Image 1 (cartoon, rainbow, N blue to C red):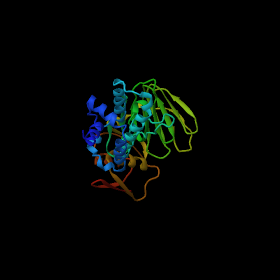
Image 2 (image 1 turned 45 degrees about the vertical axis):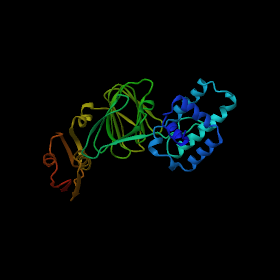
Image 3 (image 1 turned 90 degrees about the horizontal axis):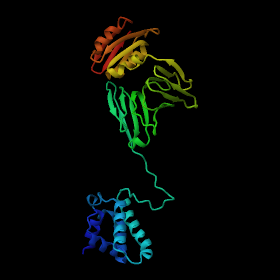
Image 4 (image 1 turned 120 degrees about the vertical axis):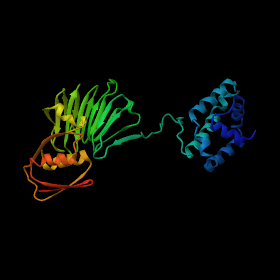
Length: 325
């Protein structure tokens, strides 16, 4: 029987019981060792498509099972030889870029780099995400979350921007959100985290309970209706009574401005509508804007309403808005 064909079918796990036994006998020969060494030296001889379906662990188990089933003689004498042959096959798999699942040395476990999934929104875009554990995330515009693909074993999320979390309850695995230098830990909880400026973070708890821990080890536990605010990278955590309904209006597509300064107001408009605002003239230092607008409200109408609070002119050219005081 052609050994090259037998070898390729071995990688695809297509050998019959008889062929597998023949192959196991052949693996112990000098010819097999030279053949496998050649494959190791010239991995391009192995077609990618043919090797793709090979699972090292399954083949190892299958081969050893066949040896036992066949009552292979001199088992103890040949056990080390079988380990050597399987190790050679594993080396071929590693050379062509596949992960071999058999651990050759329990004292030196292979380190596996976790796959990180990142979801991000551009300015003007909001999304609703469903995580593997059943939790739901509402991600605001100009925001991003990252988490491991194997999320169920480590429910950790890294947030930039703003998101509202509806956390599924899994007592054995707390849900943790890392934003700037704060860690928020929850179980079966809903809460909002907002952080668009470096060091400035605002957390509002809607239901359940959470604990918020700062980089210095300070920790606050919140009850529904409470919030935690940090105003700079060096400021301590500050607890306050939150207006949960107003804090979550953005999730329902409502833009709410509550006595915001001019600079912060224009930043919110940029994120909400996905635009760039260019300001000229003498900007009033004490100007404040307030207003509540639905998601269907056009940008020109919003700007016209804001003109009643502070006098300015504006023009819109595509995604660019020019405002002059």
